Amino acid sequence: MSHSSFDLLKDTFGDRLISRFAPVNWLPRSCDLTPLDYFLWGYVKSLVYADKPQTLDHLEDNIRRVIADIRPQVLEKVIEN
Figure 1 (spheres, rainbow, N blue to C red):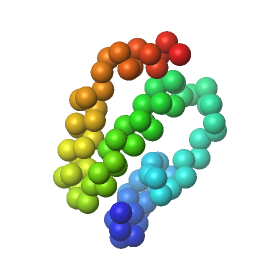
Figure 2 (cartoon, rainbow, N blue to C red):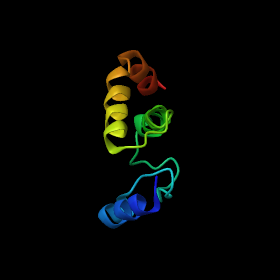
Figure 3 (tube, helix red, strand yellow):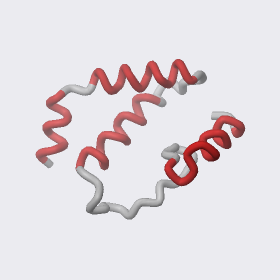
Figure 4 (tube, helix red, strand yellow):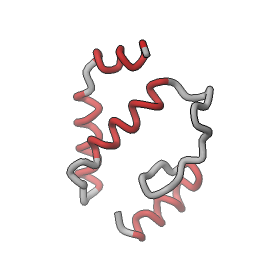
């Protein structure tokens, strides 16, 4: 991600920005978060960025594809644990 893109995201989202280049200032194991928060976003992020998308369209396509491909069994296991 270019510095100008990242700066735009920081300006737009401020402290709500979630990025591999910015810290997330949530307490570990916060009671506000669910098992899906701990697992799902890291899982999705690793797959979305696996091929290093270079355009917004590519990134959006990856997000849609990864979310659509999550099997219900995966979510059930996360919720059960």
